[in-house]
Length: 294
Image (tube, rainbow, N blue to C red; front, side):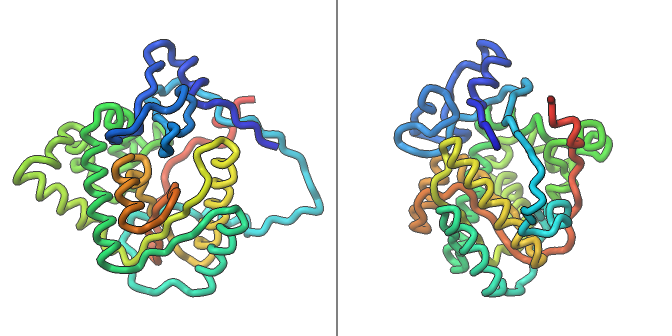
């Protein structure tokens, strides 16, 4: 049994009056504030407002019970082995049987799986992703939040056991630090061209993209979508396939609209590259007993 509280309200209550403003999604333009600041979409649809609060917040209440008659659909090892990969994939095509299995999982959850393999469309989406990344890094609320999670060295990773490490992001620490300190460099006339070209080079080939779309922005909908994503991810992991999510295509309101225009996909909530890569590095993470509070 799972109970999901109003996460945004809990964060604002913990953080105090300074966290009360309900801003639009990071990097979004022309979008209304989230309705009531509840973390739900505004009436026009789209991602909820983000929060920059780092105060502890209750995410969910879980009630677990043993069921000897229930067997998991996935091997336990997959939960430990799965990880995103920002390493370049090879050109091996995806097995049709795997795609069909993921499509069935999505459909069973009331979601839709979309596979994008048209080279020109993929290039257009990746240009859109780069634009969204640069725009978001130059939006103070977004930049302050994401930079607070940057981990530049192994010692930082081990100290915090969370966040976005340069090692796992597959970029040099100096490059990550440059983007954190001078995000406007990506917009400068000459240097900006080099910064954007470096980003695209490090990304490597993108032979295909996948997107999951459907109901997401309500509490129960998000729980169902998360279960769908986890099952799809484990299916891909079982066959040695790795994913690389492009979150800015969804959290940036303008990019999300343009993505929908390019693809014709309605209600996307995650877009990711999928393919066969080398084994990616494992990120440092908190232990279970440090996350469960009661």
